[in-house]
Length: 212
Figure 1 (cartoon, rainbow, N blue to C red):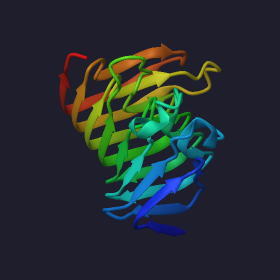
Figure 2 (cartoon, one colour; figure 1 turned 90 degrees about the horizontal axis):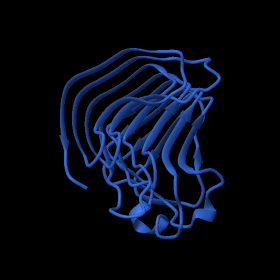
Figure 3 (cartoon, helix red, strand yellow; figure 1 turned 90 degrees about the vertical axis):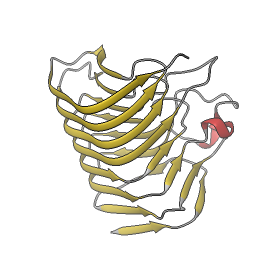
Figure 4 (cartoon, rainbow, N blue to C red; figure 1 turned 60 degrees about the horizontal axis):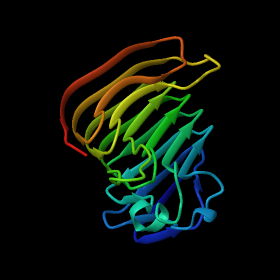
């Protein structure tokens, strides 16, 4: 099943994705989150849970509304994209910007691949929460290839928050990434509950860390 977004759309709740779906964002398409924290049943804009064979394609933008008013209205720790218990997920070409917390978290999932992305997620100077870029957490066989990332913390990172220790974090590739951060631009760990991290590769990446 395929769906096309060709213009601006304001989202008043999270979007729950389903299996065997391809979502195409046209060049001028904008999926814009609400600035009212009460509009969200869960702290994320795009929710992908227990989904297989899902795609978001095209050069449109998904905006978490952090700077547009969501943060000012008291929202903290709202993800832009949160994928969990998934297999065979692809994001290709899209712009992912401006939640109040981690941009994209992939948790307990496998074969999740991001290509040709722009991730814009800078944090405010004061009263900030961590605005990570792409987080592969307790997941395996995943990649981020050909991306530009401007984030406030952990631009590209692997973590292991599965405290049940069912999953490991392994076979993760970061390749051809230009990244700017005012904190940890690339990192392995911090949250390390899993039994092991293995085969984590950073290849052909240019990292610049600026002062806050």
